[in-house]
Amino acid sequence: MHGRKAYELVKEFSSGEKGHLKIFNNELFERVTEECNEHHNALQSLIRKMQEEGLEVQTAKNADHYGSLIHHLSLIRNKRCLMAYVYNRAEIIRDLAWKVGLLHELPREIQEKFSDSEEQYFKDHSKSLKSYMSQLSLDVNVDMVPPKDPYIKIRVLEDLGSGIILSDKSANFARHSMHFLKRTDAEQYIARGLMEELTG
Image 1 (tube, rainbow, N blue to C red):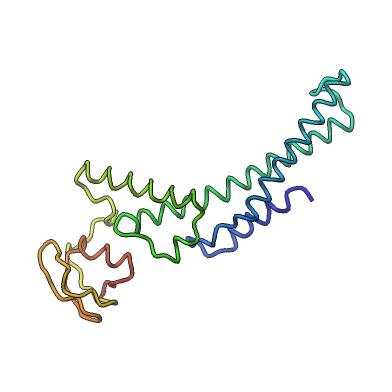
Image 2: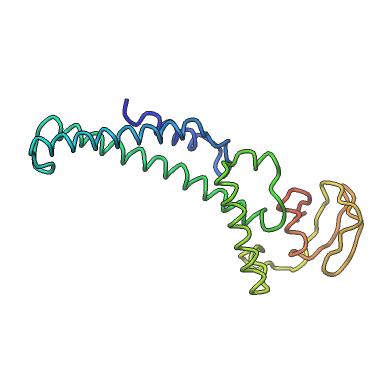
């Protein structure tokens, strides 16, 4: 049936947890692309047939006209589904670049879910953001709402060792140790799940 594979592709994306990626479904994506090519070829064939018969493509209301209309609408629907799949995945990747990619490499289990073009998109987007921040000497990755206090209390979740030098101090960041750090220093580690902010 026309459009069923494209529907499955969009449904697969929407069934996932919000803000999380599933592995790029290359096989289904390719099948929808092939279906688009089939619709395009059938549409072109019907238009050629009508022109050879001397019929006006826009005004003739015969079986070929309606057949070409069905192929045209199916082609548009499939393309919209493909674009929705790619666009929504790109939004999540862009968010990842803001949250994690500016600071460090993404974990392997996230990178494995990218297609080749998505991986390149992530690298290019992160590179552009880093370049922009270095030109302005501004870290745009910190809180958008000004904090009440520039310092926060944190707990270290993973052993980070003692080789980390922050803007105003150097400390041994052993697992479960607690520290009072500048928010800007701690945020990169909080975003990566290596520290947590203690509130209250």
